[in-house]
Length: 356
Image (tube, rainbow, N blue to C red; front, side):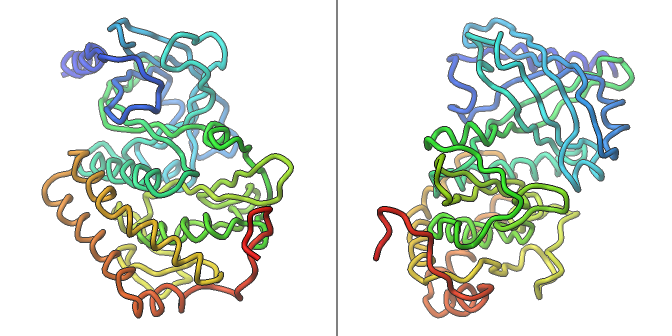
């Protein structure tokens, strides 16, 4: 049995890639083998201080040549780090020394893998990956992702190799740099400093997903802003643009362990409940217009990925259609979105091109 599993891991690396694009420029899976002391990494995952461990990241370049580069690995996250068989990882690459490879200039990347080693949980990872892909289609401020067919090999030979689906998430600093911005590290974000257009889009996207596990204003105790959110902005400017991540607790993914935030009157994540902050209705109208224009693109993203079983695909498309049945109806928009917004309406931050 062990030989068979090792053979599978070797087979992953035997698949060559026709081109040598930048890491996040293609949607096809990248074949990878990650080697590290996983047994000890997972054993220490509940500790507050978790140092990096040395590992190796192997893949094939566009010429079919095997590339193996050093990487430092540690567990990350909150719920999944503590509760999952395969906790999420942070991969820390050397910024220099990988020139001419797919990993050139990469620094810290998040690796998201199935919570448990089963086909059902692999499909949940595919759904979470698709959530990132959908947000990329509606917002210029987003995190890019790359699918992986990944083999895990324990460098201490204390566990069997295993193969699964997973995906990488780009570093927030790279996402900010695409828009000539920087990550803003703050303890809390003021509603008066959040760009209302981007914030409305993020909040509507979370409603689309059926996700209440986020905050655009603050993070968990002893952590920076914000919960399952990062903020970026131009250097020297106070205006903040939120970028969401971590969607496994959403109804779109519908993981067995997910549940809505207790503050809201719903029992299942598949029951949508709008949790955004009140703002001028024109910002909601703009966000709705973006989603309306992207309807076909969003559905095609899910269908064309060919990542889901027929049963899950049909369920997901119904979930998407349910969202559009809300935003297509002005009365339901008023009842399920506008009426549920939190707080008072405050003016948007002032910019040079703000409407007066």
